[in-house]
Length: 168
Image (cartoon, rainbow, N blue to C red; front, side, top):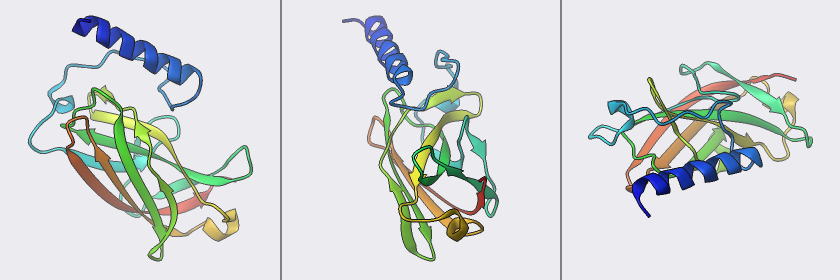
């Protein structure tokens, strides 16, 4: 197979996975932009934000919404922004949420990054708080650490501290 056929098969598989709901995907699928910030480079970076419908940057100490899930659980949805990583395949993530140094939510997702003018972006990663109530989580300060490994094995890590806001 040539590169064009492989790219077409990858896009078709991605669209199918999005259609059946296995991954969070942008409403509009766009071709990868050929921007330098979305190519591999010497100084890869990673930032953590909110990510319900798209990546939303969050400053240290800002709020992140607590979502009441349809099955009775509670979660936050994280978005990530990266630069200079190889996102030609799904990237491996490792995301930990701690409250008072105790791990309260953890995910090891495969992340689908899309190239934008701001960088590579991913969103809709659910971090579920097992056994917690909205009352207990509302106003809690959470430390979030995310590590992403790209298709070439390059690892980047980011950390932030946010405050949970119950969207009840």
